[in-house]
Image (cartoon, rainbow, N blue to C red):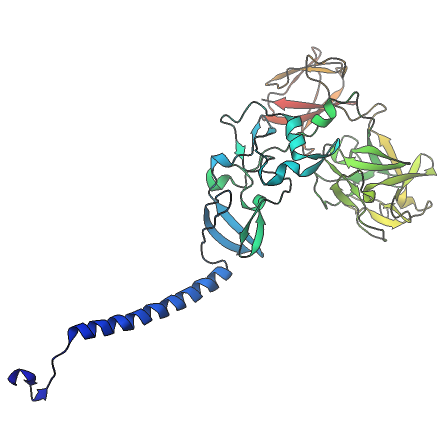
Length: 425
């Protein structure tokens, strides 16, 4: 019994196997409790977009982070070069796609009307090949035309364009790097003759120092306004397109955006740019003569309203709709062609005959451009595709123009009567 006594206290021998099982039993419930608490915390953090999550889709996106910003989920991905659906060479975008996710049947407005992505890619051609050129995740070199390829994040559908539309050969840093858009002018080149649509300016009759200006480049909802009238300002040059029955649309030159009066009509209703559509009557205007070569531009589907330039004129002054009135000088406009024979057309490259009397070569060009059919005292303007003037010059006595200082890319060479697409190497 001596071993059962210690300092006058009686102890029973401890059964260690029973104690071990008891501790295991307790630890199971502790682990279960910790799991429940951790899962609840993680779920709450996920709802706030605070925890990186890996998601998988048909394209096997490798997500590296997820956060919520202005109620839109933004996903950073590490793209793979094999995702390439397009590539760019010398300022042109070419398709390299299998037309997955139904993108081949998505329809886009072109100078020849609505065309499917498949038709556009076939018209543009496959090009010289991807090689070592920049490659992009979407079919228009980073400029997603609008198909519904999307992934689900926190119950929301996020379009492919919001994930990684751009370059896939530069890791996640290239996702937002976009290339050139499709050259849709290919739908004009093989027509039997030049288009009949003329290029005009729209000048305010009672403030002739100002004309309607569409601003740089173009986008849906982009505001239009008055600006100091200048027929050489490409932002004030409009392609007048007949829609039949005396109605016309006015397409901002070198874009596919037209003057749009929005639905219906009301005093002060804004006039903006919107993607041109032959069936959109918000973009169709009747030229109502008010005498003296001036016209009122009356909205087709709201004849009680016409384009109004406001009182007087100032740079940035808004252009809107107002109740139609032949006596209201703010609704009177002078629509004048840039030149008597100005038409929308594009010169052919050297070697093609019978399309255009102006010849220019070489194209692409590195330094000296040779031009025939333009007088030596005529000013030549070269602009980028957004309308920004990059250089002005005159043809030399030898019929050449030095463009070696231009950065490589695609430009528009503007003469009095022609628009020439120029590629600088």
